[in-house]
Image (cartoon, rainbow, N blue to C red):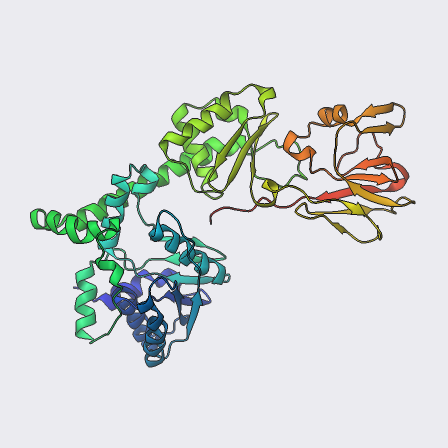
Length: 438
């Protein structure tokens, strides 16, 4: 039978050319075994630089001793250790909040071409599938934990996902390893602990291979999700084309190609697209998509999700988050038009070509503005924005250039050539729409 060390080295073969391997090291049994295995392999093989990261949540007094324990283990193995302190916000699910804080810390630390190694094993995978099944998860959720995925600027890998916990325990006993025990792991009020201590032993007493079989089902569902992702990419190909305002650097889809799909394929395509932007809604909340899709054009419908909003404007769907959901600050006097002018929560404006003369300022729409257009006379700004197809959610943020009380230009819009007069153009670089989840 192949040894645990040899199996680990084989699973890491595709990753031996990355810049470094970083171990998520809690100090518990699983990550202690993984770190010991890797340190041993590093002494025998030419491998990427190895280091460890310990995330300290500070949720219980006993945890204050864990960073020192982790440092002692790493010193003995000659592995550099980085300790990161995080704040876990109070909420309905402490487990979820701690997990999000932990992964957020890892994501922020990962540099390009780095690999984060996590020690979840086969029993963890089985528990995850059961947990998500009881919550009514779909194919994406029931695929449980992926063995590999991007993380920040690097990648995450779970090389022990096919290894049972019992094998890790045997390795730890054989090498006389010491580890910390989290007291909360014995608290059956937490759903995962209840599954681990109350449900899984009963299942394995009746079906000894239960954990392996459940984990195998997770692998099948992961393959099915891969096929659904391929279908989503095909269905999104046309919808991701044809955005009318390329300077508006926001995630956007054209609605018409989505409307041609069945309801199930619409949800699948949209879920794939939204997954990189926000936590996905549960089944009951997908009615928000139907309301957005079926609303009248003049209704300006919005679907509010966990990490942002999906707006429908014209023929497109637009994803807004971060600064786009905060009110714009004030404009102000532009004292040096030769330099870009930063706008609070609204990007910045700048000129190409020589700036016009006179005292210049940036303002925002209040209603009733008019512009003087060459050959067209005075025109209402609202009508001009309608003609240019500017979405409603942009109009209150669109920088307006004034010389005293005269409206000279609207950023990024030609409007009959007014901005290009005398060889200058007003450019606005809007704020980016923050990406909700990596």
